[in-house]
Length: 245
Image (spheres, rainbow, N blue to C red):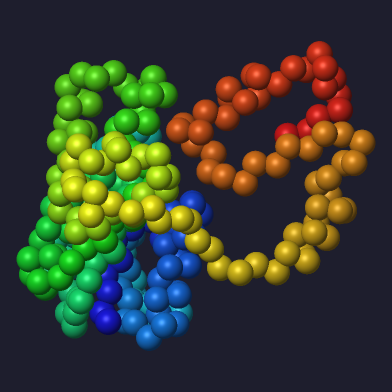
């Protein structure tokens, strides 16, 4: 199959989304599919770059404002779908039998709809953040005008997907207000096999102090995780100098 993967970021950018989408692209290619990744980069000097990595075609689209704080990122993401449509009209030799979209970001809805119509294909949405719900829950924004705008964009993305893969079964009820239960499934995270012997060696020699309590966190460190609440909850009177995070 000819597959188009839409992702906010991709290698060499280091992020959870970049890593798992890189693993997915490689696995799909190993299984005999022709994979095209459409992603974004703030560092390009031209409007886009059409290259390849490990037999995977990668179309990188320039978004110059993405590194300029939350406002710059919002401005960049609002233009995602328009930029995708503009650039994909320019590139040659593009085939598609299905499109896979990774979210965050929520601003892929119009691009997904356009690709589906042009190629007459289905779309799978990999959803890893329920946005804007989590920013409201975290107290970052209130349910005002900006929130309603985000909800409109969020709803559009869900409705343009044919199937949505979410992280937690407990979140299914949230999505039933937008789509039918047949369009939602639990999709666990994945990753490439790792040789843990090097990791064990590093932990023995550098990181782990057996005289202290060690807390190892292997997840994403972003606003949604609110790691400061974990740090603040540690009772230093009890742990004293015996803990290292």
